[in-house]
Image (cartoon, rainbow, N blue to C red; front, top):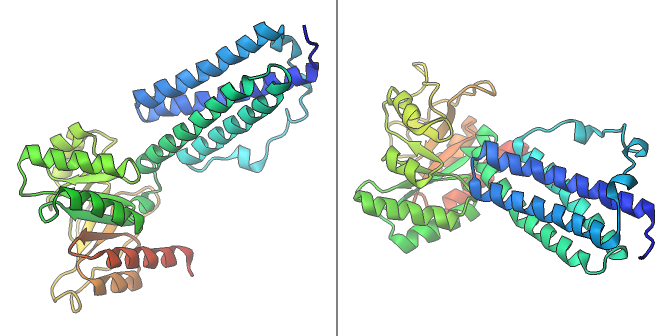
Length: 344
């Protein structure tokens, strides 16, 4: 049997362990934070496939990975970079661990060629499966655990009562391309069957790019897997809806400016201008709570002119209704918010 450099065996063992540990972090994230059985099962299968592949290499090539292990003399054992020491968000945890898995798999893929010809094909397959899993996970977590202001930064509501099925899907894709960070689904005149059909098609088309928030019919919205629910002007109902929908669904409502206490059960509150024709109307003053306070204030835009005025007034989250506000307004609102965020 071919003699194999023990340092190469040690390298393969270290990177296999690194990859398995990283996949386990992703797997537990899908399992515990998303309750997603499909993603969890896929990641678990990927982890088991890698372990099976390394066991096959051990048997076929007569390698004792455990005997070659040398973690006690690893030159990086004591070190930890500033980047490794901190994680800012759930998504940063996902990206860091997916990155270390990809790097480890690449090392196994290359050095495995010296040990067992053909193994690189199997490792490459696992690596490309990971690319797809990482994309799905990050998308899911970005809409579930975004920075709060980023989530409601540009909320575009699609009125399905004036858009047919094809227009609804096309509009959703267009506004997301123009910068929408969340999409609302409103269809006040439809019966329950048509309402559900429209929401399902919208969610399939969006494919987790951004959260989808349904206006009205909270029970149906929850059953179909919508990310959130927007109610009317009665803030007292928010607690009732929170009990019905659970903690994971987003809840928003229309409100008046802060003359009263806002319900802690709501995630965001939408304000609108009063009086005038859109150019002469009065815009409420924006307010900003501390980093953890809810709800996030969102300015409802009724006209093109209000986009500029709201930006000048200091508002950092907009809600636009499409097609009442055209695509150019969505693009302009995104540009104004980008400028405000970067200070450019």
